[in-house]
Image: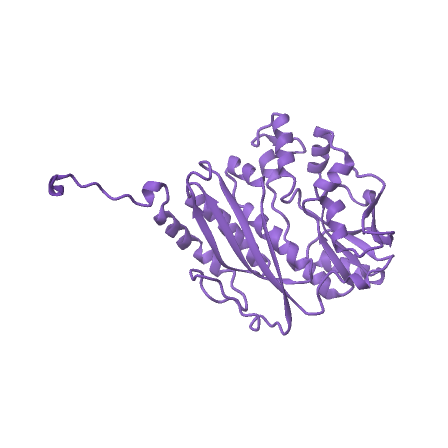
Amino acid sequence: MNSEHEPRRNGMTYRDAGVDIEAGDALVARIAPAARATRRAGAEADIGGFGGLFDLAAAGFKDPMLVASTDGVGTKLKIAIETRQFDGIGQDLVAMCVNDIVVQGAEPLFFLDYYASGKLDVDAAASVIEGIARACKESNCALIGGETAEMPGLYAKGDFDLAGFAVGAVERGHVLPALAQMVAGDILIGIASSGLHSNGYSLVRRIVSEAQLAYGVSAPFAEDRALGDTLLTPTKLYVASALAAIRAGGVKAVAHITGGGITENLPRVLPRKLDAQIDLAAWTPLPVFCWLAGSAAISEQEMLRTFNCGIGLIAIVAADAVLTVTNAFRGAGETAFAIGRLVEGDGDAKVVYRGSLRLI
């Protein structure tokens, strides 16, 4: 048959497969100003290259050790998607990475993000990435690149996922924890959290579902705010305050209290044969924790190994430096207070609790 007489078919495009290149280009153009606003010494290049560049010498480092961290936001994203509130999720992503870097005594330097969806919603993606940029700027951490992936068939309509990657640096010899310097009698200083941060949301969502609550109703523990709004309170950025406290002197270790709670995170920065003795009556957990524990009859032990329970960071400090370090945290806007001390142990480090949480 003569092909000259056959009707021509239009060739398929990437858009036909569900991927909109123009939408991706529009997103890059929209977020470029926010990314440029995060520039700092060592990171002056525009985004758009095949890789992000950073000049350690220009940042003032002489003999640095690099510290890297990667994380996501977890199922907190489901609440953001359901409520269409995306402003704080970017801060969650950045905080979960840079807080892990600063507790090792390092200064976060640059950040990259990964945003994946089934169908790119430019407005939603821009809101998230602009939040990432704001958090990076607050942490003096340059947003030097990222990746936006549109993958129809892999993600349900409206769903998306986030991942972040951060790199920091600390001069050799100043890496925390300083295990060899810790002794019984060192003081534990707790730094208040802003809420749930980004951990335990699979349990939180289960509790909300079984209580048959909608995210738009008033929160049972904060009637002037919607439940979804309170649960989406962003994770605190501890970079500026932690660096101020570390530079004040006397800090031997800092623990970021994330998934696993105090029970599992604090021993990660302790040497063998030293335990952390914590006075649970030293603070009052935020109302959200009291509501969760009461609504689902969650035991104190389970609360302490699932949620931060109101303590987002714990610094281990020499006894004679407590006032200096506490004032440094408070001067940077944190609520800081002594919650316990190091005591002699008999093996691997562990947390020993005294008293009870004020889950009332």
